Image 1 (cartoon, helix red, strand yellow):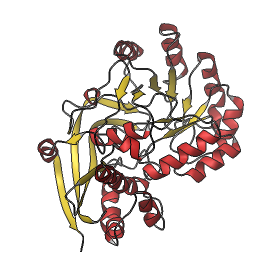
Image 2 (cartoon, one colour; image 1 turned 120 degrees about the vertical axis):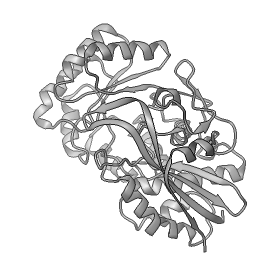
Image 3 (cartoon, rainbow, N blue to C red; image 1 turned 45 degrees about the horizontal axis):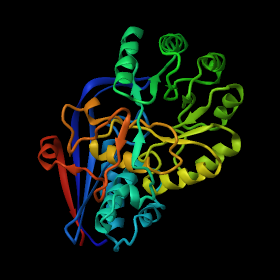
Amino acid sequence: MELKHIVLRHVKMQLLHPFTTSLGTDYDKDFILVEIKSKSGISGWAESVAALDPLYKEETVKTNWHIMEDFLIPLLFREPIKHPDEVSERFAHIRGNYMAKSALEGAIWDLYAKQKGIPLAKALGGQKEKIEVGISIGIQETVDQLLRLIERNLEQGYKRMKVKIQPGWDVDVIAQVRRRFPDIPLMADANSAYSLKDIDRLAALDEYNLTMIEQPLAHDDIVDHAQLQARLKTPICLDESIHSVDDVRKAIHLGSCKVINIKIGRVGGLTEAKKIHDMCEVHQIPVWCGGMLESGIGRAHNVAITTLPNFLLPGDTAASSRYWKEDIIDPEVAVDNGMITVPSTPGIGYEPNRERIEERTLISKLYRAE
């Protein structure tokens, strides 16, 4: 792949509904959209999942732009790329900045699959023609609102409900959900809101037959999680703590979790996501794909990675219509009875709508290969 130019766009999209977690409330989604064009005239697309504020992780839209512009894009232009796996190797000496790396690498993966004339899912080694999808529900003003949302999403066929929790909105809330819906697959996501001093409170969730509790303790911890997992019957799922296959190796060794959430942006790209998937498969640790309020372009990458065989639990890749009045791809990501049909056309399988993209672009800049 000989690259012609790269375009970075700062895009802003308004969410249909506010989304609240223990970290705060989102009303809009700002992100960097990446387009990489080859000399053959084909464009590959991806997006960075970094937000405006360093709350989920330390990266932001502004720091991602800086890292891409000043460090990563020059490395991509250095010489032609034969395979997308080379990108993570080329970026390896740049520490951290996983979301910036992932966005550029993802666009290379899309470009590669299009040049090969195959779907991105097939390029990654995916096997599924359809994937199961769950839903993530933010913290609501009342439990009644939460129960109505769960009921509505169950009627739409979603296969699993994930409920955000935080101190003061946890055990009693989960208890009421379970009383109303005794048999649904249900998980709780804490987004690092607890510490070991809350161990008894978290252990009380064992009573409610949860599929998992996601990242209850500190965002960078695997040691305390091991102590917590030894106390709980409920599987712990690690999210923010996992950035690499080496983090997975350590977490497995310590017994820190029984499930791992793979977010492409958090782990630095599709190549590392595949490595994590493969190690977890060997150790019989199921994985699933988490969401970051992506536009349809990022959502398409999530669909592709979820086709790998050890993605055994429904992911967070819900339909475009759940988040956006109008997405920036054609067709939009659609869910039918809790399932997404994996695209069979080359690359990500969805066409970026340039008109809608330009309407939502605040800043754009083109970088040419020398």
